[in-house]
Amino acid sequence: GRHPRQAVSATQINPALKAFAEADGLAWLDMGERFLDKDGEIRPELMMPDLLHPIKGGYEIWLDAMCPVVDQLMERSRGSDVSDALRG
Image (tube, rainbow, N blue to C red; front, side, top):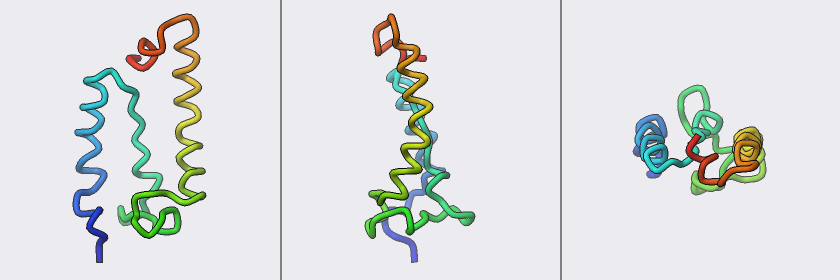
């Protein structure tokens, strides 16, 4: 069966989290789909048994997704306040 942490799916909660982050001027990167199989279930081979914390393969996916965003934010921040870069 489903793990209790999957009771609310990422597709249900991520839009609210994105709106919350953007309202506070934070950068948002939705990585949920990278960790899901074709049925929308968490790929257990990427996660620890709690299905919350990634293992090495999951962190590699996370790193690959985050690097371009961090690079973009760092480029924007050159010569400006970092908080300006986070606001877009």
